[in-house]
Structure formats: C-alpha cells, structure tokens
Figure 1 (cartoon, rainbow, N blue to C red):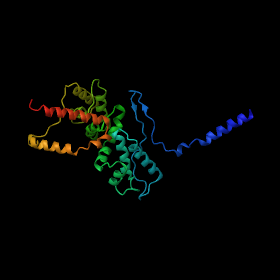
Figure 2: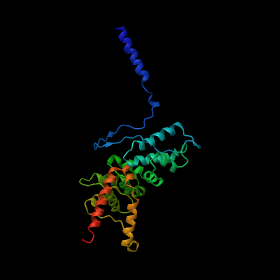
Figure 3: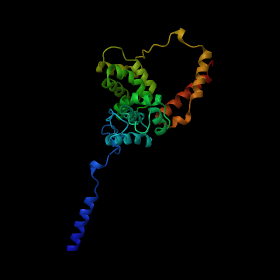
Figure 4: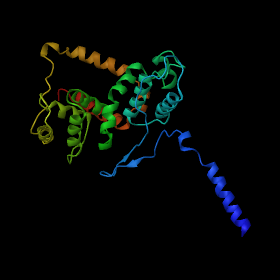
Length: 270
C-alpha cells in the first residue's frame, strides 16, 4: 500500500513537472466556436492586431517574432476567409515584420506568400476590418466586402453592419455581391439613420426600390468593337490556377456570372 501511494504521488509530481507553462507556449489559434444565435461554426483564430515596429533597426523582438509566426500561419494553413489573410498582411506591413530577412515587401511576398503581388496584398489589407466585423453573420466574400467598404468609410462600421445584417436576416434572399452592391446603391445620401436605413434595404429587397447608381454618360461608352477587344484582353490576363486560392463562394459566384454572360452573348439578336 505504501509503495502504491508512493508510486501515485511520484506519478502526480512527474505529471505536474511535465505540464507546459502556459506563458511559455504562444497560442496562435483556437478551435472553431459555434455561434450561439445561428449555430454557425465561426473560425476563432487568434490573429494579432497590427502594431507599429518595436525597434528602429532590422532586428525583431520576441513579441514581433511571435506575431510574424502567427500571421504567416494564416497563409500556411490556407484559410478560406480573405479577411484573415488581409489582417495578417496588415500586421506584417504595419510592423515591417519582413525587415529582418527581406529588404522590401515585394521580395517578402514573393518568397513567403506564394508570389502574391503588392496590389493584391493591399486589396486584402483594405478589406480585413470589414470582413472581420461581418463574418460572424455569414460567409461574406471579398466582393461583398468591397461593395460595403465605401458605405463603411462614409458612415462607419455600425452603419455598414446594419445594412448587411438586414440583408442576411431577410428570408428567401440569396446574398451575392451584386445584391449587396445594389442594396447600398439604393440607400439615400445624407446622414445615417438606422430605422430609415433598415426600411430602405427591406424595400429594395422587396422590389419596391431600385438602386440609384448613375450609369456612364453615352459619350463615355466605348464602341461595340472596343468593348469586344477590352473583354478579350481581360480574358487573356485571367490566371485560373491563381484563382484556386480564392474564396470558394466567390469562385462559384464568378463562375455563375460568367455562365450568364456566355448565355447572353450566345442569345444576342434572338
């Protein structure tokens, strides 16, 4: 019995000494959490907020190194949410976290982010706050976020959230980038009013209000031949292999729109 107690006590001490110090183990990610209201699984990544550099030279502090590892893990794990990449890139750019190993952002993106261009990186950075704010409400994609960004810039994130929440909570509505863009276009100019905005969005979704986005003046429209050549140039520049890393919902939406365009082209004049 005494030996048994000694073994148990020794095992307990051994287990205690083997337990890692939580402060010494940086936690980069948490497992997904289920949102209480909708039951939707929401990724609970711990992506650090962007911060300014902590040194004036090319060295990285321990804290900066941990943030860089957390940011790069977003890309290495091939996350589908565009805003997660955007937030990670924003942290790297704001903190100049590439400065130790790469002299420029372009060199860093080429080596560590699959050859991503500076333009694409800044597009993602521009939209990460929109995506982070709205992602718990649904699977928002990059095009939807871009449609909402001007409204957020003008009226703030709370106003933007009101618009998007009204759309996604309306029964029978398929949320697409075009729908979001048109809903924003149907909103009047002037100071934001939550009640009137909700009423206006609902009226638009019910078909009672049309988007008030002015089209180009007739003199600005290219000729039919010019339109064909411009469209051909766009098609030639498309790199389908690069689209594999895009948001699956955005890819599907793009494919659907291209099919509709193809059908319209084939039926012209009928």
